[in-house]
Amino acid sequence: MFDGTGLRVHPVRDFATAAWRKLFTNLAANPITALLQQRIGALAHPEMVALTRDLLSEAAAVARAEGADLGDEDITRTLELYATAPADGGSSMLYDRLAGRPMEQEFITGAVVRAGERHGIATPLNGMLLTLLRAVDRELRGEWPAGVARSARGGGAPPSAAPDGA
Image 1 (cartoon, rainbow, N blue to C red):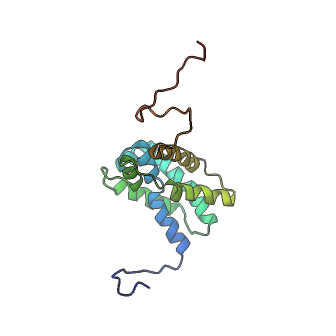
Image 2: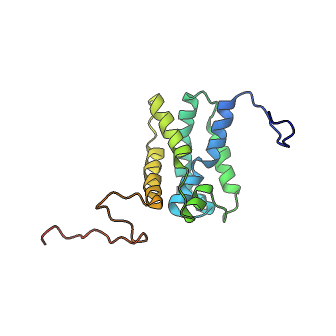
Image 3: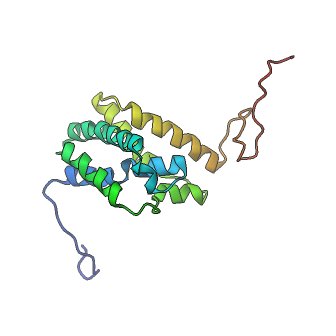
């Protein structure tokens, strides 16, 4: 299929594991950098390392249920990847948000949450990130329900703190 294209294809014996390992490289960095609007260096803070480890641990449980051979060493490898990445680097989701483009949360975080649901595995951290990412994405797309105030940056006024009629 790829003969003559210049592409080099390396077959793997365990595609499920390879696919989940690839997903791991994006799983924490993409949503966190996009939500915070900060670069990869934000992941170096000890609290962020702990959050990232917990996000990856949730996903590893889901990956195993999907047939992937992932464990603590994959979590550690991903954390090391983030720690050695240039601090001023970004993620595709961050760049999409900064450019006002729709983000890819459904293909990264959403994939983990949906797979967790299929297997009855709770993914509260990934689920929370997905909810927040969807809210940001709705704003980027200009999809706001009637009567919902937009963020101050988006030009909408905040709702009044006073009760009606006050």
